[in-house]
Length: 118
Image (cartoon, rainbow, N blue to C red; front, side, top):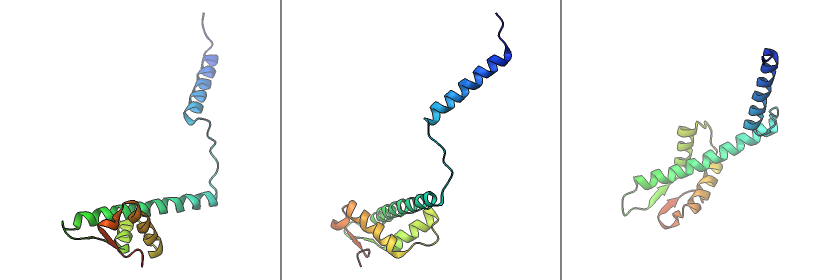
């Protein structure tokens, strides 16, 4: 039994398309819209500021001596956001909000001092 090369190619291409569909799990690729793009950028920026606040708190804890309180400033968060995430302009209010959230989540009231609440 010999097989027609065209039929074999047709079946192989069909199997490739089915495999690609399984990999992508039926997700539809929608064209980029301005609203979704801006929302994604805002989420990324917010997430990066929260991470920058975490990094600033961790760095301040490493810098502090054994008996000293940990001092974390909004400026520390802004500088980490600029250095690690490339944010050219970071508003002080946004950085302070991120620092307040992470300050409370990390239970820093016991050993930290910050200017984020001013």
